[in-house]
Amino acid sequence: KQEVTQIPAALSVPEGENLVLNCSFTDSAIYNLQWFRQDPGKGLTSLLLIQSSQREQTSGRLNASLDKSSGRSTLYIAASQPGDSATYLCAETSNTGNQFYFGTGTSLTVIP
Amino acid sequence: EAEVAQSPRYKITEKSQAVAFWCDPISGHATLYWYRQILGQGPELLVQFQDESVVDDSQLPKDRFSAERLKGVDSTLKIQPAELGDSAMYLCASSEPTGRGYTFGSGTRLTVV
Image 1 (cartoon, each protein chain N blue to C red):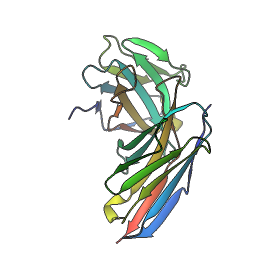
Image 2: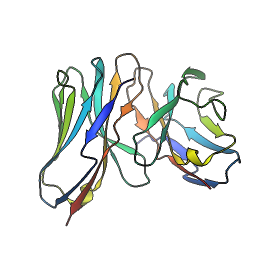
Image 3: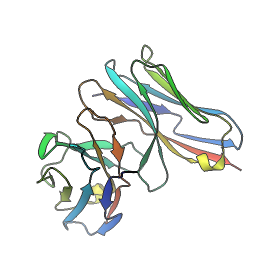
Image 4: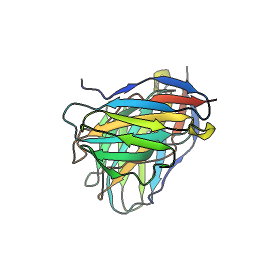
């Protein structure tokens, strides 16, 4: 079974700071890696998708990277804002199916 | 923008009662997924449908959980009898068979008391 780990479990930063969220995975046959945002009690919003042939993806203040050889992905958030406060989940799919394997998430709080 | 619809948004039920959740996927999406997310954890797949057929239900507790997608469109997930440990967010998602367009619904938050 694929395992996905996210560190740290919780992070609190002052507004304006740049920050990095970490995700590690054991699946050597990863198909793609996706980062999601989840607000309390809500569903999942897709942020960035990195296919296995790619190294990174960018959207606005967000940048996600993928290093298959080390089994790691990072989500970089620039100039954090209070509205960024949420739980961030990474998930991978293997090349054998469409199931997502999720990490346990990082709960981010951006302090005004 | 197309959405995956789920209802109800919230459900409180007593232990040993039956409970059901409904999901309407994005039109044209042949693949439908039910995930369970326990508080503080990531979602885990319960069942995956391709049209009306189950393609993966290895993580579905079949003694009390059932899922159907009779016409290959909308789907129902049922729990009978509910247990305290079933309290969780139940998320539905849909995609094209290749995985393209994978979209999650807003979920149903179940509390068993």
